[in-house]
Length: 302
Image (cartoon, rainbow, N blue to C red):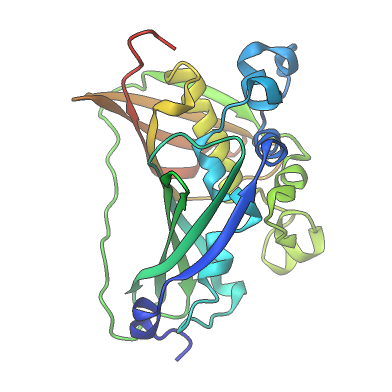
């Protein structure tokens, strides 16, 4: 059996040392569109709001950087876990959650501890849940939960697992913003560590069933979080507590993401529901069940 759920979930945690610096952070931010000029903002490259993502003397770290920090990916590490032996062609990235324990540092050395907390049997497919907990000398930094959908690997008699679909508020969005995905966006984003040729090689993309390379799902994930932080959180990355999304569809470089936001105030903070679609394909779904949990702004407004 390619997936031994009991063996995978009972295996000893695996540890990996991570290290990153300002260049890694800047490259990631550029890979998700930081500093890109638009018709509305032709001077975005030198806009102070964008320099927070691109200039080392003003740098802060978007929490979604956790998905590429150290050049390692939870997806690659998790699929080499004991009890898991699957065909990569059958693997889809189903969903991603990042929980932030404190602001991510611009320079860091940390230890990543990886486990497989669950493997679910969806009948015709299996869902593998990968967890990466990262801590440095000062304590926990972040936790990543990655859901991997593996076609053809279900039917082993395991638990079906949760099937939760979030409901968007029954009202018009509070904010709508759009982000153009440049034609070379995937080529730049892949330099942060995801070298899958699906995102660069037209011939490989055709073998996978696409007429051209597609954007990394985690790139759309990062673009969306940056848009939420900039549009709804005053550009303050430290307000993000957690960010979760389900990958509902593909994006092709050159397309435009339409990002709809609904605010929901809660005690001590708030929640922002998000829906992301591809404008040029009649608002085809891109990210669904997407929520950003956040804290209140600091009293000083910083």
